[in-house]
Image 1 (cartoon, one colour):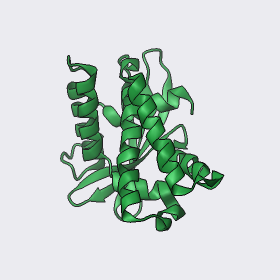
Image 2 (image 1 turned 45 degrees about the horizontal axis):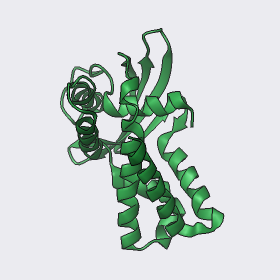
Image 3 (image 1 turned 120 degrees about the vertical axis):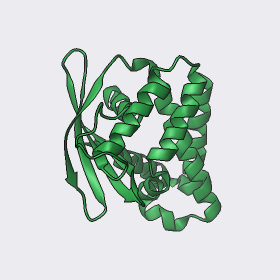
Length: 204
């Protein structure tokens, strides 16, 4: 996976746009939801004068709050979901979150004052929205980022981050499908994910 796309996913997960797109405030507005995400990501993680392990813990808490992890996990598994039992699904959910948290949190140091500019918000079905934005670097570079949101009660949650046309959810789905189809089955995927988590922890 291209490094700048991986970092862009980390960036949008943690800080979002610098301000709401609309005057309307509150979690019921897609841009305001992302704006709240932004404020917390900067103050609680990137700019916080705390050890990296504490930043990682806060990152996990934010990920749990703002992302619909069970929904993303079901999408990632796709047709293989029906071949799993409850214990396997629970283990997958834990490992999937660990993979994302440990992979992305290792890149905290790459933040260098980039900002995210919101361009527009469009409806995505009856209960969703896509927030279109750009990461603006200090050197004037721009990376296109779309946030796919779904309404959950009175607020939204993120179900995908699309960077330069590359979907986070689809990328994981393709990678995991390849592992399963190589012959190891679903237990083989869980084993590979556990090895990845162990390696990431060891390198942290």
